[in-house]
Each structure stands twice: as structure tokens, then as C-alpha cells.
Image (cartoon, rainbow, N blue to C red; front, side):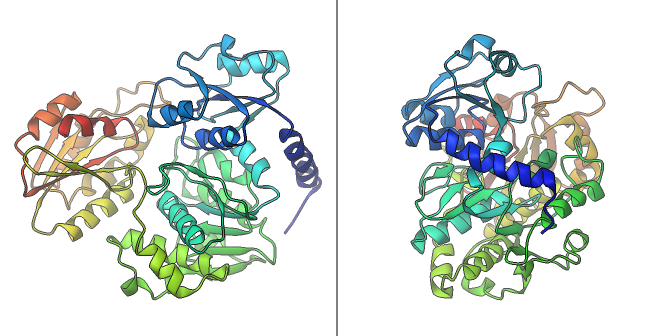
Length: 445
């Protein structure tokens, strides 16, 4: 591993700062409802720290944090930062002129992004990090479950809520730290993993990265930091991964060679791939094959990853999924068709970000082939300003050009729910998107 002077200074600083954090008592989180930021907030609450935070709206995540003792304000403003705050942690999604972040700087309070804080927290741990365009949340959760079942007592931060624990954070007492490491804005470069999983690499986050080569450069930068005793778990012959793993000094493990698919009872080829990656990690750590397979076969998934929500009044089954990239939509619907070959499948899709929708418009046109009906909701803008050049109506036209079923755009969630009021026992409804489309579950049920 190549360690330059800048990296050495950062390592020395983080080791010292980690010790200082132990003596701090009062923390403020900007964007505390975010899936990553909330995990660190939960960790500090469980350690008896005083936690305050802000977010734009209430959610299941903020409600759980409030139950643990967090004081959360839902109007971001400078006055939310008190002078006795010792450290501010913020989501990378906020702008540099966020009033709370500016107030922290004015008061001289240290402020760190979630990825920076994650790097500090994991520095002294044996870190197992999972990255990739698709599947990293599920793979992280699978690894966590296997290690918990094997009594290795890991600490875990995952980008969703684990089904068994109903939490995105698990406080373990061993040296093992399992964490989902996102590539967006090169955030994962704050972490130095001992075992690093790359599930896959695909063109995404093109509002930040220039192209697939730029994305690969970020993965390559982290790969080159792995030393001779570190492990990289991936499919090294994949065309998008191959350039990343050339001439590395670490140990490379090809998860695609694992031949345990028949013994692992998981639906969907993408889930079988995730399971093979998790299987490989657990094997590196010395967990027996029998324990790994038993653990994977009792894996219940995570929040918003093909999560079964219940049945409508007429008996239609409703699933909620986070799929928002064409590759994810294809995988989710293929799995649905595999599970329910004789049922009528209706996909409710909310495109996420104007930029992503525009970048992948042609791919979305072919992504819904396993759905009988496709209902589209308006684009969820998230962090982006309005862009009149792209819309869900345009997506609907593209999908309709290659789809034989109904493809309909609806302006309101309520209208989608009304249209599906007639769905019965022969129907499966799959809700997909990374925005607020999940709220339609209440309307359907």
C-alpha cells in the first residue's frame, strides 16, 4: 500500500481525534434522518451522548431516534446550533451555505461530513466495507447477519433498516466493523478497509462523475490503498471491474466462483450474487460453510429491498423496493416474475433525479419488460433544481414504445391508488423508487 505524507498525517490525526471524541458529550447532526447520518447518531445515543439534530421532515428513522432521546428540529436554521455543541456531523447532501453548517463554522465548532466521520470511527477497527452501484445494502446486511449468527459480534452500519433488528446500526464489541461504503462523490475514500467488497460497477451518479471511466478511477484509487494482507472480494473478470483490479498487491477473491447457489434459497439472480459475495467474506473470516448457508437461508432482507408490505382489500400483494436505476428495475422485476410466473405484475415507478432519468432514459425504455402494467409518478427531484427537459411523461412515452401493456403517468399518488383499487388475488404490485413513493403503501393498504 502506498502511503504518502498526506495520508500519514490524516491517519495520525484521526487516531488522535478518535480518542478526543470519547470525551465529547454534545453532538449535532444536520440531516439526521439520512440513513447513514442516523446510524452514527444512534451509535452516540447508545453511548449516552447528548444528540440534537435537524431534518426537513419526520420519518420512521427520526421517530426511532427521538425514542432513544434525540432532540430533533424540523426547520433547519442557525439557531439550532447551540454554543455548547462540541461536534457537528452533516450529510454530504447539504449545500455549503446551509445555515447550521455556517453557524458551526462561525462558532469554531468542528464539522465533519458523514463519510469523514465514518473514516474516523472505523480507523481502529477491522473494517469490512461493501461498495458497488447495486446490491451493496443487501450484501452488507447479509454479511452482518452471518457474522452475528456466527457470534463474531460485529458493529454494523448499513444503508437500510435490518429486518431482525429494525435498525441501521448494531453496536458490537468485537474488532469487526461491517459498513456500507458509497462511491458517490468518492465518499468511500475516507475508509481504509481490511476486506473490501465490490458488488459491481455501473454508470450512475452522473451528476457528479463524468462517465464510467471516472467512476472506475475512484474505485481504483481505493483499491490501490489495499495492502498485501488486505482482501478484495469482487468478480475480477467483469468488464467494468477488470481495469480496477489490475496489478494490485492485495489478495483478490472471485466471488463468482462460489458454487453454492443451489443450497442458498434466495429468489433473484442478483440476490444469489450478493449471497456469493457475503459467503466469500465470511469464509475469509473462518466461518464454516454450514453456518454461512444456514444464516443466508434465514435472511429476511432489509427495509425497502423487495419488502413485503401486505395485501390490499381485494388480496393483491404489495412489495416496496428501492430500485431507481434501470439495472435495479430489471433485476427486481425479473425476480418478481420468477416468484410469481402466473400473476399480473404492476410496477409503480418514481424516477429519482432529473439527471439520472435523463442519463438513463433509453435504458428505462427496456427496463419494464417483466411488468404487465407500468404506472409512473412524477420525478423525485431530491437535491436537484427543476429541469423542464425531462419528465415522467417522457419516460412513459419511451417505455410505451417497447411495452405491450398499459403504461400510464399519474400526477398524484392518490390517483395511482384509485386505479389499483380493482387489483385482486391474481395481482402483484411492486413499488419502486428512491424518493417518497413508499408512502403510497398506506393508500394501497
